[in-house]
Amino acid sequence: MSSLSEVRRVAIEAVVQACRACRSVFNQLVTGETLIKSDRSPVTVADFSAQAVVNRYLATHFPDDAIIGEESAQDLRPDTPVAHTLCNKVLELTNAVLPKPALTRTQLLDTIDWGALSAGRSKRSRRHWTLDPIDGTKGFLRGDQYAVCLALIIDGQVELGVMGCPNLPAGSTATTTTAQDQLAPGFLFIAERGRGAFSRPVESPDASVPIQETPIRVSGNTDLTQAVVCESVEAAHSSHSDAQRIGQLLGIQADPFRMDSQCKYACLARGEADIYLRLPTRADYIEKIWDHATGSLLVEEAGGIVTDIYGKPLDFSVGSFLSRNKGVIASSAQLHPQVLKAVQETLNIE
Ligand SMILES: Nc1ncnc2c1ncn2[C@@H]1O[C@H](COP(=O)(O)OS(=O)(=O)O)[C@@H](OP(=O)(O)O)[C@H]1O
Ligand SMILES: [Mg+2]
Ligand SMILES: [Mg+2]
Ligand SMILES: [Mg+2]
Image 1: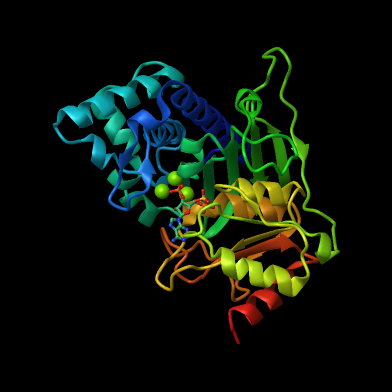
Image 2 (image 1 turned 45 degrees about the vertical axis):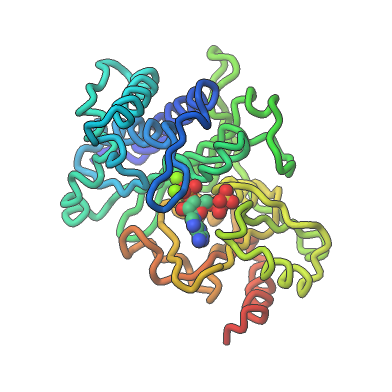
């Protein structure tokens, strides 16, 4: 079994290279190659490339580990000109960042589906990874925030989380990303259970200078009137109207800070926002583990608390879905009880 430092090193390298693939897609072809999946969310060449890159690292270094990743190669497999063109783009981009030898088309497809193809591993193993190759696909396509999110789950607990946020600027709650932010290296966050949360640039601006990790902490703010709430850009993903009523009840003055992806958890973890609300918009929506595993550990290790709207911890022990939870409330430990109370009063939860 590999040491935790080796696992951490490989996970970071995988996410850094996946961020590189995403950036190169954005610079080369962003919206042109968008296709619509059955859930109608945009899936890009970057999603596939980033999943191939991370899976390739994990399969090479930890061949016995299971992986639950968001994407599948189903849209790339058909023997049609459209699928071939798309697949060739993904192959080119993936091979541009992976160490040699280059993947063949079949290897690429099987690497993207590495988790699903060997699902039996998850039954034998106590540990598995979860990957969101691009969280905040819509943010990515707009040139705003998105995150490559990888987490290691052992016995149902998230033990390691690595999040690459290529467009995230340093400590600013600006809602749109400037051209300058897109040129900057962005930030990478690492959380290890019991060992804290850290931030570093995704890449060093100068290859001869070693990259430094900086510990991060949630905000110490106890004045709710000054609190900053972050929420999804997409009103379909989190109820903006319920959040507004909760904000009023808490006496929060500032407008909500809307940002795509798990970058919201990162902003909370580094003390830039105080509260993250994800409030159900539909009774039947169940959150996926890859949308929360990395971010929730990051906030907890930075001193915060993450629960669902019932006040229950997120339960990562039941497969791909957070089927025992509804919504998310994350904040510093000091603010969490008041925020939870306001959420429950507003949503009529006993
Ligand atoms: N109805 C509903 N409710 C809650 N969440 C949903 C819903 N539909 C989709 N999703 C998931 O939301 C992920 C995007 O996260 P955010 O909402 O934080 O960002 S954004 O505002 O959509 O940009 C997004 O992740 P990606 O697909 O990786 O972008 C989805 O898995
Ligand atoms: Mg998606
Ligand atoms: Mg996601
Ligand atoms: Mg995604």
